[in-house]
Length: 93
Image (tube, rainbow, N blue to C red):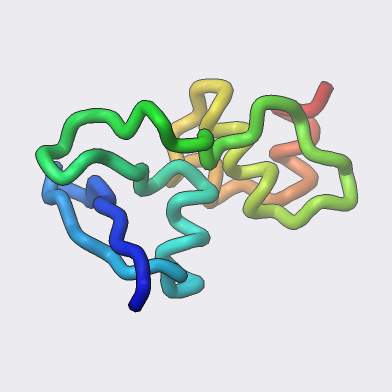
């Protein structure tokens, strides 16, 4: 039996998803494009934030840098469109 979480998708739709999440969905959560919510769509407070709280290392995957940029105010689509080098330059420490 797998666990189920609720994810707020585009357009405000709440979607029930079985864990482990598919790779594409997990990537979108890492980059801040999707976020976990309660079944009624309210914020999931007990969730460990999927966005990083500190800058990743320069050797980290681009997805981690996208998440860091989003955590610092970048729009997910804009951050995803940037190269890893541009993300490091714009959002590195």
